[in-house]
Length: 124
Image (cartoon, rainbow, N blue to C red):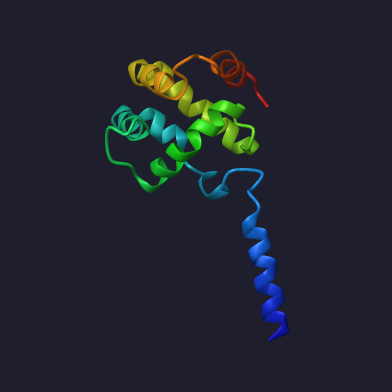
């Protein structure tokens, strides 16, 4: 019984603190498949813009977008940083209209544009 209480207390403490990085659940997300399929990429864009339905992944990504933009993906793992760069470049090259809408929605004053562009061009 004592062991169960200690385990429960440890779990409660662990869950009470925010994670240093985003959930690694989608670290193996196939960004290349998304980028190569313009229809699928458009659907994700509409999800992010609250203009269409979301997959489970899209919904989770949509929740992380504002924080990732403001912190230049500061809570992202190296794998997540690369996935973000790949997907953003996909939007920028294949669906620039949706990228512009996302930029306007998430950064209407352009506060994060310069630093996010530096993040996108870095290779860490």
